[in-house]
Amino acid sequence: MSTEVPSYPSLTPDQLSYCVQALEVFKAKQADHPLIQEEFEYFKANPSEGVSRFIATQGPLPETFEDFWEMVLQNHCPAIVMLTKLVDDNKEVKCGEYFQAEDGPRMFGNICTVTRNIPTTDSLLVLCHMLVNREEKHGHGETRESEVNGGCLVAKQDVNKAKNRWPDVLAFDGNRVVIDPCKDSRPSSMGYINASYITSEANPSEGVSRFIATQGPLPETFEDFWEMVLQNHCPAIVMLTKLVDDSKEVKCGEYFQAEDGPRMFGNICTVTRNIPTTDSLLVLCHMLVNREERIHLYLFGIFDILNGPIMEFHLTPWRFERFLKEYGIFHDQKGQLWCIAGIGRTGTYCGVHNTIQRILVGDMSALDLDKTIKTFRAQRMGMVQILDQYVFCHDAIIDVLEDLISESNI
Image (cartoon, rainbow, N blue to C red; front, side):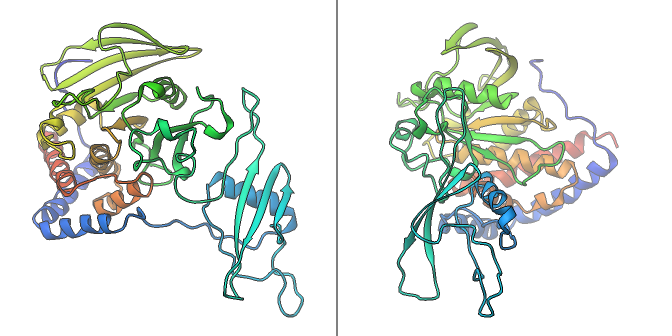
């Protein structure tokens, strides 16, 4: 990798048109600070983190019961809303009996459901708590459970609490990264690491990156961290925190070999080669990660974001733009991002990077940054943590768009 900051690739006529249109929209919004503040205040006032997505389906047929519960498991559905009786008043069957009506277990293929009815004062309302379990044999011969319930149940398991840097920043069950195999082979750990998949859409367009947002690794999670990197074939790690801040407080474990050379994490070997840069605030490393398979990746560290309190974001749009160039906004791969908790600066980076990439592929829904951040916050709590970070997203997007347009040869 060159030590010089590369130019952006030349834009096609369509891409130039997209950028010009987007720049006009973001400049108009940048001038309307009350609107930006109003949008951010909505994020803060709605800690439920985003807007629900639904699966609409027919009442299951007997021959589709197992498929129905497979769908529930695969989509980590936190609730089922049933709007029909099994049999109507004319004795016509409207829905198969896809669950155990009385308290107790019932098998559907290799999926076991356990029902516990919850008493209510409304005779027209039925509430059940359900545990859905499938026996999934793994390399260590254990069984894994999936519970149909919302929130962060796996993160809150006693065996996983020590894996969270902050007790109030946890990975949601529905889109958490699951490590298999995991250093912690206890069944109740369920392959847990405090990390979340982040995308702006269910099936990202070609040319739009997917991210893993995660906390700065703890010493007890180093091996799991590198296992996650290998299993997801991550091409880059973006580090937005120092290991130790200016007050000597540890913010991130030393999960990589700082000097050139190898370091083992369990049976995973990492080899670091530092790359000189002309920017003292940017750290670049080429890393070789090796076990049964070998992957190459780059580690990028940007540290001028920590010149003040931990919640502040001091990275200027200009430096951010240089960083986007170095990382390559055109990469259609999965990367990893984190700050300390993996939410504030991480969410800010993801917001800018994702917006620019989507504009370049002609997805003009990217102009609704408010919706993008809501989507991110539905996938990981607190993505874009403070108003200054949300303002910064707009400033950085404008800077990158202006540079793309000015460097265009069209």
